[in-house]
Image (cartoon, rainbow, N blue to C red):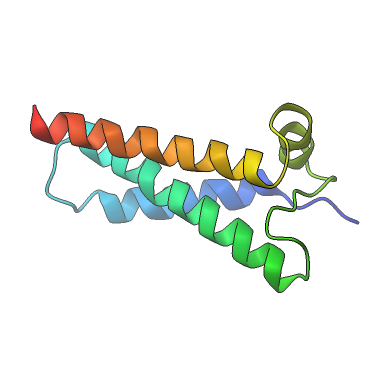
Length: 102
């Protein structure tokens, strides 16, 4: 089991999303929060679909990469991990809502 390099793939995703979000017609604070929304949705959808594709339970968390070890130790798996992901998404969406309604 060779660890997956989560850092490199995360950097590529963030740069791609930042380039796309650059063109949305809102100010910098909303753009930053929008990057968070897109990456949070990706985090939720990709993890669940990848796990199911690999034949694992939907809430499976690996045990070789440092990010997986951190999640297992400090967050958990299954619904616990999904709750954290949805909570992060909700924070970003709340930030956008606050800014746009102010």
